[in-house]
Image (cartoon, rainbow, N blue to C red; front, side, top):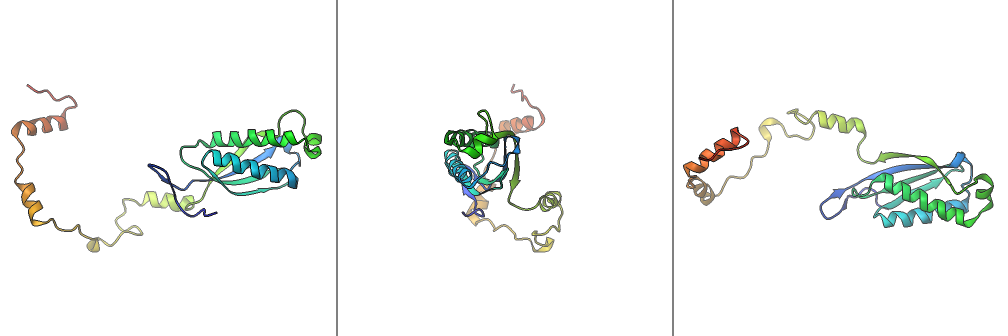
Amino acid sequence: MDTERFRTGRHVVYKLHAHIVLVPKYRKKVMTRRVADSLRSTFKEVCSRYGATLDAFETDKDHAHLLITYPPKVALSTLVMSLKTISSLRVRQQHWPEVTRALWGEHFWSPSYCVVSAGGAPLEIIKSYIENQQSPNRVGRPPKGKRPQPPPLRKGVAAAHSSIRVPDAAKKVQRSRSTNLWPVRW
């Protein structure tokens, strides 16, 4: 599981991670080894349906932690809803005594959940980076006199651009567009 690399889509490059915590109904201690194994396989299957990956999964007796990498087209609420619904159905179909004794009815998960974005730089570093965007001496920016200059234009390119003439009528339309939203052409 390489959680450090960026993923790509057709028009997007992303690295989105979410730490999800799910709790069984009434916070009952129903997470045995076989329940956890069933949940792990179900979570992997559901994640693959959404183009996401299950990077880490662990349970305590009364809650489960998931680390998921997901594409930007997926709404986290929809992904969590599917994870909870399908895993609940599969665990309930097994009729394991540790689950049926502790939980009654059709539900396995509590209706609430916790999602925390994960990965990348800490918030203080991002905030400092954003606040210092206009600072001339920010970290990573070369000193003022030593900034790289753009390469000079080729001789033919500069001469070709200087010889282009814009008709007077086009100049009037350009000026009117810059001052008015609706240029009037007489």
